[in-house]
Structures are given as structure tokens and as C-alpha cells.
Amino acid sequence: MITNSKVDPSRLKGVMTALVTPFKNGVVDYDTLGTLSEWHLQCGIDALVPCGTTGEAPTLAWDERLKIIRACVRTSRGRVPVIAGTGTNSTEMTIAHTSAAQSCGADAALIVTPYYNKPNQEGIVRHFEAIAQSTNLPIIIYNVPSRTGVDLTMHTLDRLAQIPSIVGIKDATGEVKRVEYIRTIFHDRFILLSGHDETAYAFNLLGGDGIISVIANVLPHVFVALRDACKAGDWATARYIQQRMQPVFKAFDLDINPCPIKCALKHRRGMSDEVRLPLVPVSVETAIEIRSALDHLGGTDDGAAIFKQVETISGSETAPLAWRV
Image 1 (tube, rainbow, N blue to C red):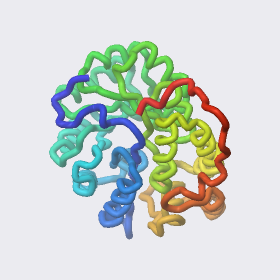
Image 2 (cartoon, rainbow, N blue to C red):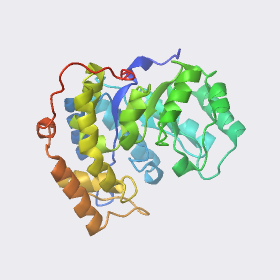
Image 3 (spheres, helix red, strand yellow):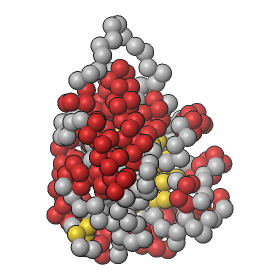
Image 4 (cartoon, one colour):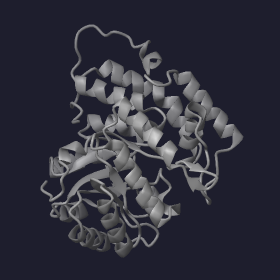
């Protein structure tokens, strides 16, 4: 994977946070964004991903997007890459957003397949070809058919693999077998990142390179611990974390992202749960479920309480595949 960008594509792996955009009385709260981002870096997160679905990109103004990216770059100070969400359903606007993100210091671009207008596979290829020709930022394709109405075929991926600056794929389908298919056909051509928290563990066991996580906003230490356990071959701890997280995954599925994560951040971090219309905060009933799941999980900042009950397994276990990060 060869690009003209200054960032080494090998750094675009591991546990990354799909950052929320904090609001205060309708205005982006840049101070809170900086505080949240710094906390994630201190917890060991591998990259910051602003201006995506979780960041409510569709309702952000042009200048807000740029200020958010600059804020993340300023907080990171080169410690981790900043992967800016720049995708829209307009090729021209996506090129403009990507160029602007690069000028703001972003290290890579996360670009969703065009949504609503539902291009065919030829249109998708031409969309990414045009973007790649306009920037030397590494591009991570974001495939989320549940939101876009379009999916990527293996034939399309084969054509996109011919574009050097397309270095990775964020797969938010939740279909973990896809990573096996892609890895078998394309080997190490693409960095493969899960975009579905609940299935990220299995995704990475089957050959993935990491996760762009929503719930890491409020539990970065948990996802860092999961990453570390997998890298160390500590499958007992990794499975235990996955099992303990099940009630959290279930609670977060009660409403649409990013409403549940903003509720969780209000509960755990004292942040505002404000979202922009047409999104609205979660219901009282859903908020109770989210708070209960987080309280049952235990641990606030270092995750220590979460791992106290891990049983020691005698001998060693062989994993199907080592986590590639």
C-alpha cells in the first residue's frame, strides 16, 4: 500500500474512537471535545475519528467540520493519527471535504459509500476514483449498507484495490464472515476495521486489524484492554470482556447511534446528551437501560473492576488467529 501521505498506513490499525460531537445550547463544545479526546489518548486509543456518523456529520456546518478536525489534530499532537470523516453522497462535495481535512492536518480520510442516491457498483468505483485522484490522503472506505442502501461487491473491491491510496475498509455490516472472504481474496491488500462494536471481537479473530468503535467514547479502557488481551493471546480475558459487554451492546441497540452514546457520556462523564434534529435524546426508559448496563459493568476510568472476575485457565490456549493489530 503506497501513498504520498506522511502517515504510515500501518498506524491506521488498532482501537479507534468514532468521536461524538459534543454540543452545548446548539453550538459545538470544542473544549469538551478536547477533554474527551485527551482522555482517550491517555487510555491508549490508537486513533481519533471525528466527523463520522457518531459525530453527526450530516448536521455539521462546513466551518464546524474544519474546526473539529483541527481540534483533534491539536489534541493529538502527532501521538495518534486523526482519521477525518469526509464522505457525502456528492462526489464533488466529498472531494472538497477531503481536501479541506487534509489542509487541517488530518492523517487519513474515512469516506462512506454514497447514500440515498444509491449508485450502482460502477458509480461507486468512479466516485472513489475521482476522490483518490484529488488527494494523497490514505482513504478508508466506510461500508455501512444499513445506512447507505448500497453494498460493496467483491468485484468492486477488486477494482478499488487497484487504487493505491485506498488503504482500508471499515465494515459496519456486522457480518463477521466478510473479513474471512476479503482476507482470503485480497490477503493484506486492505486494512480491515470493524465498524460494529458487538461483533468486533469475532471480526478481528477472523483476520481483522482493529475497530472504529462507538462505545469506546465512554469505555475506551475496555476496548484497549480487549485489544491488548487479543494481542497477548490472553483469550480468557478477551472472551470475558466480550461476555461482560453484552448487556451494554443490547442497551445501545435500543436507539439509533449516536443518541445512546451521548446518554452514556452524560451518565459517566457528565457531558451533555444534546443531539441535533432530526435526532433527539433517548427516552427515559432507554436511558435507564443504558445507565443500568454501564453500572452493572462496573469500572469507570481504568476498567480494573471489570476484570476482577476473570477466571484463570490452566495451561495455554491456541487462538484461531492472532489479532492482527
